[in-house]
Image (cartoon, rainbow over all chains, first blue to last red; front, side, top):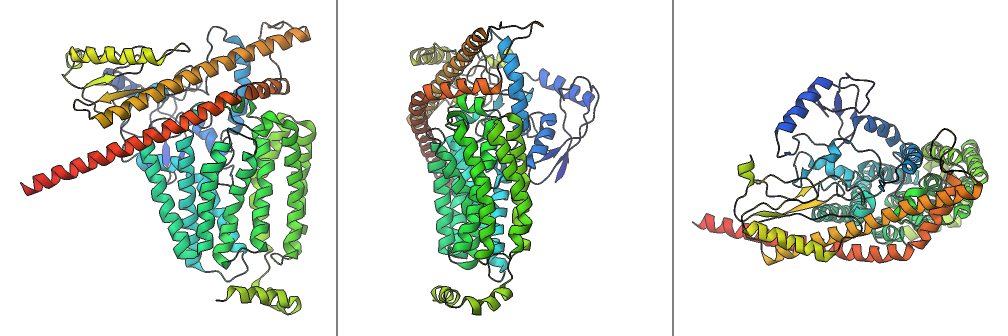
Length: 440
Length: 200
């Protein structure tokens, strides 16, 4: 990383003189501490003198540092899927509180029939030259490919790889991770390419690169192609063709099915859940070369997890969905929304119990995971019964730590290969038969 | 500064006029042609309504802050002095798409605003409450009551969104394809020029 001195207006009147120190880390996250007000004034004066409003020398990727600070907290809230619900993660609490504020404020604005999409900073109100700045490009591409989400997708694929009952191969693991990451970047870029006017109208997504004109659609598509093609090629040639096929299928499912379906039917949520379930399956098939019950179980766990996660999140974004034209259960079928979330919480308990039956984990796994599964089911029940903002928020935030913890427990309870070989004699035919099929 | 701004012959800007609901493509083309003739007269056309004029030396498009009604960012397109037919087609496609998007979202957001107000008003009236409570604050409905409005609004506008989606996807593909063509032609031209300069 490198240190960047940023001069900005905090927008917080009660703290007039603060010092800004921004540390830019590799993945483009900024941690703000304080602000230098006098430096800001100097910069603003210079800017005003220059009537041509030349583009700022430093990249202006962030809107308001204070909001960035809030966003950082939310960034930790991970989403284990290639995408889904447009209003996933990040400024969730921000959006909901802003929504509430807007509800009160908008009623007061009678002559001004405007729907503000969140607050704007001074940066936002400037005209900018639409020329790609090379030193901004990495940050722009990172945001275009939703790099944090991609990282999470890669980690679920790694979880699938790790859970596979085969000796660990480092090169295969690295190829899988890289290939999955590239495929995810491609899919996310195409998604943003398709959604520009809709992203402009929703608070969480209005600062995306294509919306702000920081990159042209052509460049976005070229970037997607230059990530997707090598990524799938790497998976197909460097790992195995099954994993490559799954990766390509997932890109197609996400960009050509899920993205347009979001605006046509509530079925998009189920499609999105499948999209999220495929990466761990890919990890498993990369390690073992075959699509067996263990892969499907892991996929099933990710699939079921999507529902309490997304349905709870979407509960607070109903206004934005309604205005943006997104067909989501929370808007059109609220009862179904809560029911589905609850049912899938129960399904998680069931799937955790099936894991030892399939010889993926020991029996300690369902026992240790029962408390967290019961807790999320309890919150799911509360959400089902109360149907209010606080229960939906509780369920959403629970889902954020529930998944990593579940996967971690699963990994620690993984049935070792040696144990399985012992058991192999007992299980007899089916095991050997599986081996026979795999050998050429 | 102003002198420099009064223009160099040739290059000019075709700004896109933005107005709220009653925008029509005919007015946009007349504005563009008006701007064009202004350029021929050697004047910088005013980016009417946008309050911004890009610097004369800049050869790229400029993008502005989000529009109040549509939340879309307007673009002022740069018109190079020797604009080829292909480049003109691209620019016009982009202008048209921008105008169409602006029209749609401005109208849509305004409708949302208005209908939401009406809904709140009718509900408050049914409850026997006033628009403003004792403290003078505007009365609001809670999320569950508003949910009915959101569901209604979404279902009512469903067909409209389907139509817009189809339209948007078509335009987006066409514009990106044209961009690709323009980029390719420019790249070939540049390569040809380099070959010529190398040979010389």
